[in-house]
Amino acid sequence: MSYVKPGTEGSIVVAPRYENFIGGKWVPPVDGRYFENPSPVDGKTFCEVPRSTAADITAADIDLALIPPADRPRVRGP
Image 1: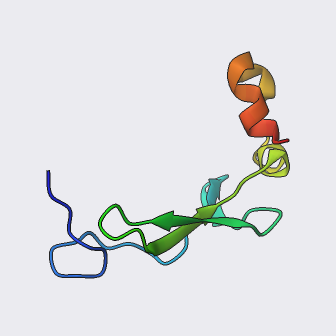
Image 2: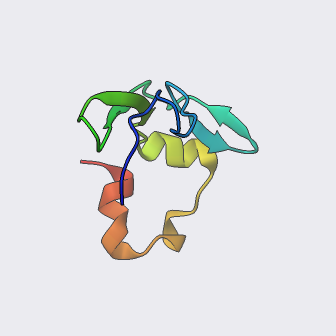
């Protein structure tokens, strides 16, 4: 498989920043923090994605009981 560098001809269109999709709309993470998403081609950041926390889960009204116990620490954070 070959990759095309983001932002060059033949690459997919990528927004510079993504938000959480909650309740049918895009909203920023509650804490306002983002992860940098590196390109597999050159390792440079090509977009940012939400660094969501338990506060975002609460805002989304997601029932933690529906999340497998092994995955809950990742949702709740440290």
